[in-house]
Image 1 (tube, rainbow, N blue to C red):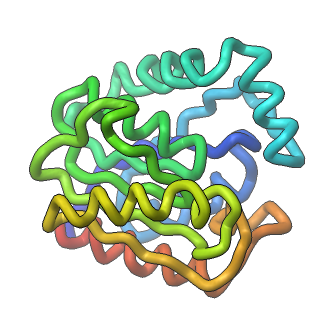
Image 2 (image 1 turned 30 degrees about the vertical axis):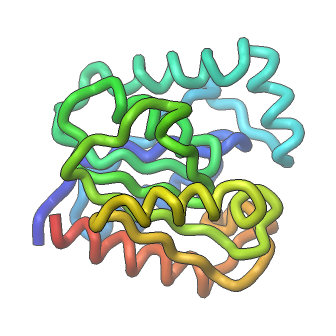
Amino acid sequence: MSTQTIVLFHHVAGRTPGMEALAERWRAAGHVVHAPDLFGSRTFGSVEEGFGFVQSIGGFDEVRARALAAVEELPEQVVYAGVSMGVVAAMHVAARRPGAVAGVFLESFVDPEHVGPWPVGAPVQVHGMEDDEFFGLEDLEPARAFAATRDDVEVFTYPGDQHLFVDSSLAAWDAAAAAQVDERVLALLAGL
């Protein structure tokens, strides 16, 4: 098994206990996982509250700047991962920093033309629920279009409509779907 260094960016509710649990599951599989806190220990009970906080700190430009600052001391050879808003941070950083090994995008996807080119040779997995109002209705088609242009991009969908279903501390948690996500992500990591 190959050990990977992963940076996992949290979603708009912050670095919740469920985000910590996700990082711990990947650590238990033998990987080094950094889970930077872009919100200064603040967590929120809803997507709306989290977006309100993002707006109060200067919007997504500030989130992206904090993400870049969070990886300054990390080695270049990193797997960039994110959940929802964290995908924006992960893709932004990978487009500006050499050495991306792979991308793991959970419950979101951004067309690379909006955040910068995705590095050649770095495989990607995208995971989300088919009927999630954010992923299924906004991000799924751009993810599939991106996958159609590259052999190293996989898009996985899961039945349901929950957003943030990989976070065990939120009401949207779907244990079965999250376990499938972990299995597929760990298989990708093992093959790098």
